[in-house]
Image (tube, rainbow, N blue to C red; front, side, top):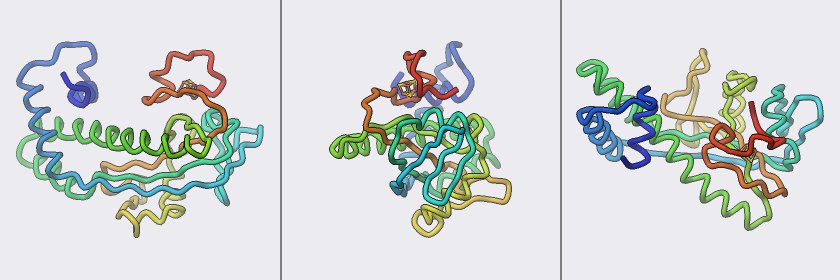
Length: 214
Ligand code: SF4
């Protein structure tokens, strides 16, 4: 199985269980359909960062109370905030299938989640090389809603990135991003070279790392 198919199967909740050929075929078809539909867009900005020793993170006028984020960002001098979306067409496709074929809609949902991660990983790999050219190393991506990083901070990302205007990314009153297959995240930039795992601390074997997020 190629890695994106594997990831989508994991999102579908198969875990270690074997996945049947029919589902695998559905996953492959869904990725093909997504490849024709996705209009990935991403906006990012780099800010000076302050991480005082009290469980807060300050990015310009934004103050975030999150011990998990503060731990992960400790020692970082800059932060890159980003917003990314697969576009509204993906929502329309998912809606269409949810009315006609629920199984396909669920598979598509999982594939779109995997495609979004893949899109971000690819961007991050390029950005990592650019940052390295300036002597900065990246910590893992951290999104509002993760650990004690309050999901309501998504509105700050949308404001600071001007993402509604730049890439059509907004949110509802209930803090749901629209289009739905979108993400906001922040990445710490440090002068210290810690070879972070692409998939974040959860997949990283360095269990004694002092920046490890819980
Ligand atoms: S645990 Fe791994 S991924 Fe997480 S901050 Fe440490 S080195 Fe980076």
